Amino acid sequence: MNQFDFVIIGSGIAGLSLALNVAQYGSVALVTKRSVGESNTAWAQGGVAADIAVSCKRTGLSAVSATDNYLTLIAVGTQL
Image (tube, rainbow, N blue to C red; front, side, top):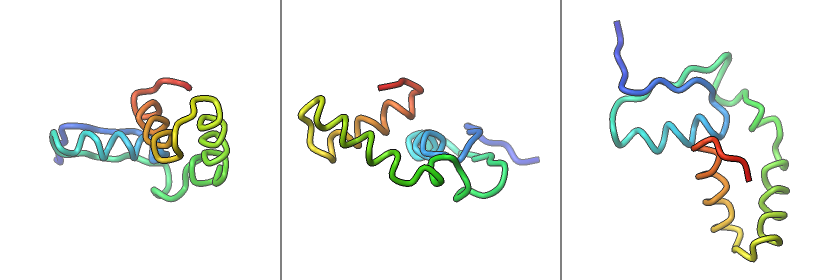
């Protein structure tokens, strides 16, 4: 039987971001219903980019800073 330090359910941006962040602390298993590329995040395509543009306008952050903040908030389950 395989054992992992972290088991993450979901291969959307939140799950993948979390997997990348916790990998430095132990082994990670990523559980997805089909394949990593089949997630609502992948299907949304420009939906994330549009939200980043709104965030940049509202906060005055650069696109890189806004994207980093957005992904960090998603990884911890907080909404913008």
